[in-house]
Image 1: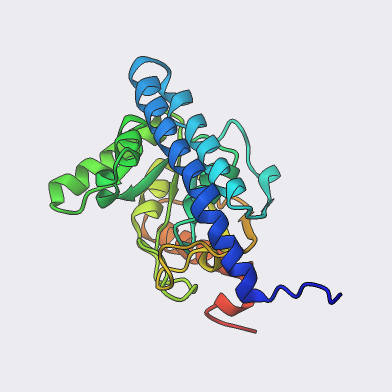
Image 2: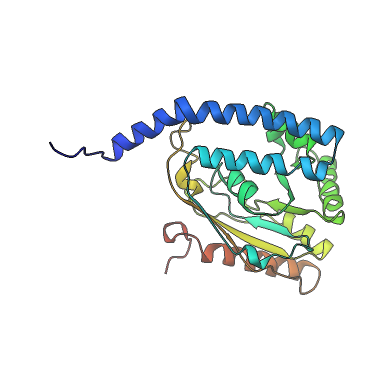
Length: 258
């Protein structure tokens, strides 16, 4: 009897059947339960706890249910007593689950205002006091950054995707200054994060209803301490952050390949 030959197409088909009939129901239930727990917990109890831990567990449930391997490097570089501004490349939707589930630090997201309208998830994010970047008017944008300042003054860390949106091809695009201006103003260290594999798991432009199996890696780089204050410090921190992030990107997604 010949051994069963499972080619890539057959494995993909089986993985999609698994997603449809096993993973999707689990993820749906986990999402609903997490959103309810976050809203109730943050309303009645300790928002510092309920705004982080349920989301962390939810993210891990999603990653593990989809059988996605994860590796994290560099957690030992972070101090428990220090607030940080984390900046990461934005490969895809699964960046959220990778960072939330595996960074190992309590933090608040700075996210697009449009995400507020997501059913249940948007409500939970609002209850947890994550920060929606509202660019619809200058006054709303100022209010966004004032909320971010308050978050940092209260000793919390922030996670920002300075590209502003997901990549179309896996490579990084230009960074926006907002996160670096905040770090400069508050004189906080910036920690670059490199995300690998998320683009392969769920590319922005391919089969939006399915997840592709692929390992993901989160690399935590050395914190970049402020060396001054003002435009030059912002420029240098942006430059160093982007260089560090790109240094551990997979070769195929580096802008400047060796």
